[in-house]
Length: 152
Image (cartoon, rainbow, N blue to C red; front, side, top):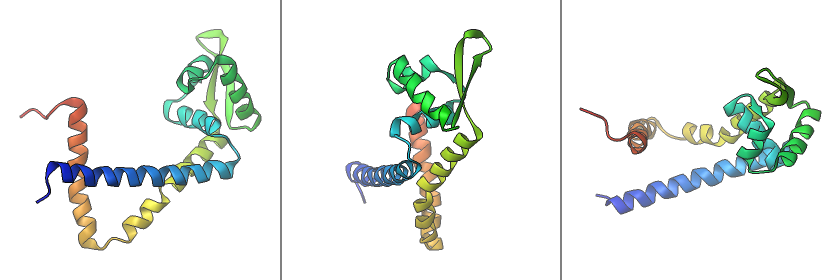
C-alpha cells in the first residue's frame, strides 16, 4: 500500500507532466500564430473574463497602462479584439474579443489538449474505467480544500 508521501509524489509527478505537456503544446500554438505570449495572454483573459477596461487589463497583465494600450492596439489592428466606448463611462474604453480572436483562442485550447485525447484513446477499457473512478475522488478532494469537507 502506498503511503501519503508516495501517493502525493505520484500525483505531483503526474501534475508536473501535464503542466509541462500543456505548456509545450500552447507554446507551439502561440508561436505558430505569430503572437507574443503577452498578446495571447490578453486574448485568454478576455476569453475567460469577458469585456474588460484597458486599465484593468493592464493590472491583470501586470503592465503599465501605456504598455496595455500598445499591446491592445496591435491586437485591434490584427482584428483579434475590438475597442469600444464604455457604456458606463464614455471617457473610458472597453476591450472585447472579436469573433476572429475567439476562434483563435478556441483553436489554441483545442490544440493544447489534443495530446490528452490521444492518451485516453490509448487506454484499454479497464484502465479507462479506473481513471474514471479515481479522478472524481481527486477532484472532490481538491474542491474540499477550497470549501472545507462536505457536511453530513
